Length: 389
Image 1 (cartoon, one colour):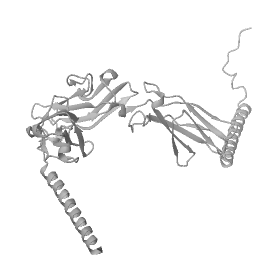
Image 2 (cartoon, one colour):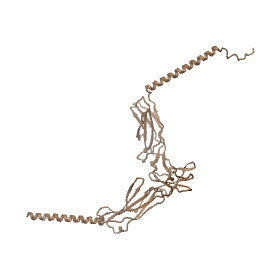
Image 3 (cartoon, helix red, strand yellow):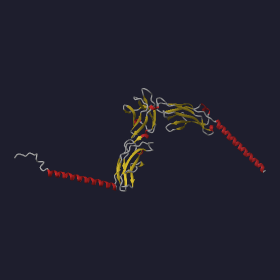
Image 4 (spheres, helix red, strand yellow):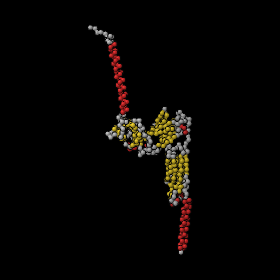
């Protein structure tokens, strides 16, 4: 009887294993069988926004036969500014992204299925790919260099450049810009000139937009040969340079502190968007730095026998911008302190020398004056005429 039950149990285990293996095989075959085609008609369109491109595609016709699955698209494009592939998943048939038109534009798009038809797993199609090569019009040495923009006090922005290495004497550069909210790219509203040629552009605050991409293209014209265009994408809030600060008060307190006070810089920068760097040192020692949010700073337990000197600057903090642009340093101000003994002794020696020199010179002068009166009596009266009686 035991053997009978044991044999039944073994048959049950064997049948269960066979059914499990069969079910897994079926599932695997279903997974292998599920596939999807890539999107079609992938296009990269340039509307003239200096690098802000439109990407469009169409779903594959085979999706009409797909039931019980959601359909999305996985878009990948190479960001030259970040140096990596960016992945976007969307249900739409279009997407807009920022590119550097001076470099290759690379885009990939795949169809993505998920649902009952794919057994709850993601099924990706092969990618459809497209690459747009940059324009090679003009020598690379004709392109501008050392391009730099500063948004002064959040009131106006200046962008400057240096001409390329291979540029004809009468060649000229022109700047065009675009940001979201403009219907089309426009030329620089006010050029900065040097020796009659454009070397920069001045933007007022009304021509700028913050927390959005600000696209710039600087191209050129030459009578003899074409010139290579240069493209840049900025975010003005990251380029704000505050005005230089002024130390208003530098005093010593009763509890052995030096208190430094100032006011926020002039301009349109909100006070809560600023941080300050205080630099201070004692005579010839190395300067020390502190970054703070307040407009006061104090040093505790100072050595009253040494001079303490201070200067400070400001920038936009991390809560308002991603900025590395500091203001210029303020003028250095020092708290005088009590002179050291060696300094007092030096001044005493100098004072003694000056006093002795003054006494000697006065004595010599006095001796000369007395001698002149003794040996030349009446010298002042010989040439005078007597008045008639």
